[in-house]
Image 1 (cartoon, rainbow, N blue to C red):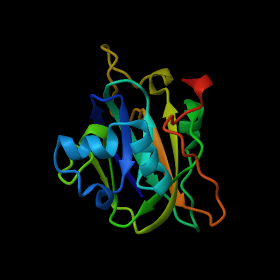
Image 2: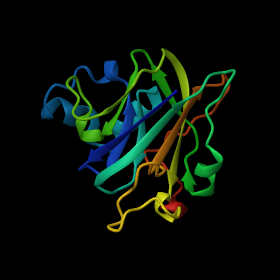
Image 3: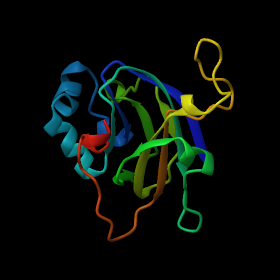
Image 4: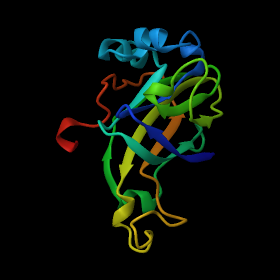
Amino acid sequence: MEFSEAVASGAGMFGLWSPPAFRGVVDYGTWEAELLEDQDIDRHIRSGAFVPINIHSDGEFQFLVRIGSAGLPAALTVRERAYLVVASEPYLFVATDGALLSGIEHAGAKPGPALRVPLPPGRWQVCIFLLDWTAEPGHQDREGAPLPGALPDFTLLLNPAPPTAVFRTSIETFPRAMR
């Protein structure tokens, strides 16, 4: 199963997040208490309620979320691997009522613009891949905008979490040397 959409952030960070975990976020004060400081975000990462896509840059980017199963795990395509820039280590995501992918500033009881992912309940392993879609010939118009069929900026692979897996808990999505 795949879901794709352009998502924007003015906060420099995106996230895949669990709607039930942020139902108490109803205004800026409650958002600030849950997500303003790194230690608050860290708490949500460790609990599996938030997977950071922390790029330290505002803007709109195309995301693709691919969901696998135990029998048919989600993987990058040959084409995606050819334009891979950097990959994250796996994060834990605990789904109870689907997932949303948005700018961090849109997490809350009434989410702003977001990619809705109908993820079945359970423990999921999430890996984030940054792709250089601009390096693929023939997929940009004269102004540099993507043409139909262009690769996304980010591909997220979601697979059932192995019982003994160790997960990344850093607010920094990608290794420092790669940023």
